[in-house]
Image (cartoon, rainbow, N blue to C red; front, side):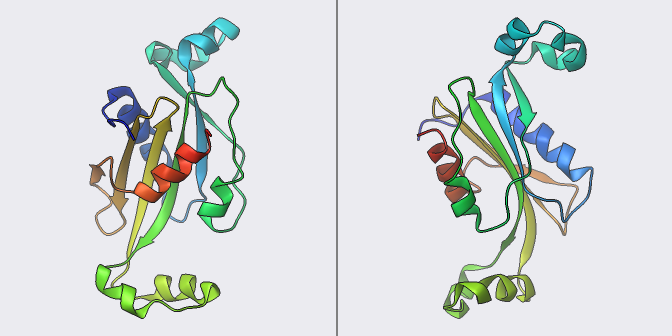
Amino acid sequence: MTSPKLPELTEVVLELEEYVAAAGWNQPRRLYALAHTTDLLAYDPSLSEHLGDAASRPLTPIEQEDLPEGPLEQVLSTIGWPAEVEGCVLVTELVLLPPSAEEEIPYEDYEIDVWATTHPERQDVRVAVAVTRSGAYSSCLRRRVDATEVVVDPDVADALVDGLFATFL
């Protein structure tokens, strides 16, 4: 992976996480394609009215249809993007557990979700993760217990970054 330092990508990640956060918790996964704003405006100049101030940004997110249920890793493996899509953003809620919980993980896949959601040390979080074809990435995290703070950390969801990069192969 290349350096995640792409300020406009972090701006989009924060904007989309805030947009989803406005609807509260227990939201479905949301996937957005990222297109070059100049390409969108060249294709349809009337979009500048709809985009407003965002028409000056380099990237524009376009919300996609609802993602199917199922393990996120499997869902992402079914996604591919046309050449016009420069990147994508996934906003999803996850359950985080401390490293000490690894020893207790059930062997059966169907038991893991129930076990994780009822674990006394679990933390509910929402992450927004973005990647581009060029290898840039960014992500942020909001914890449910302290929903006012959003932490920007490009390495907060490495597995999701890898899964999103794979949608461009």
